[in-house]
Amino acid sequence: MKSQPIVGAAVFTAVMGAAGYRCQCGGECGNPHPNGQGRCPHEHDQYTSKHGRLVRLMAAPVDPLATDVAAARLPASELRAWCPDCHTAAARLARKRLPAATTDQCGLFDL
Image (cartoon, rainbow, N blue to C red):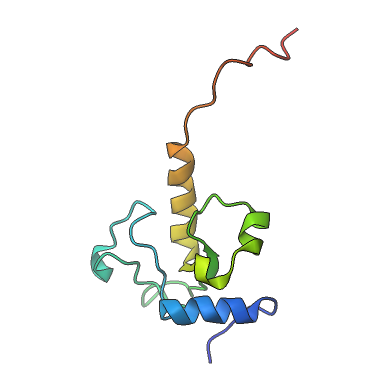
């Protein structure tokens, strides 16, 4: 039996079952995952390598920048399995791709 969270176990199990308990990152993290044929090879409750660490996948939105409130409202069909490494890297890349803040109001609070 695979480990699962105490809260939201039904949603977690549905997402992981659909993903085959494997990270569903297809390169959104910036890594083309050549060893996994284009998909991250990390599996839930498995080790990253012989001397690596244990991987615990999470059910999270496809958009790694979704707020916690928005993510909590999504049904299991709109979530995917992410390993922590891919989710963090995908969020970092998504933040870099956001348009730069406009300078229209930069002096709004200058005295």
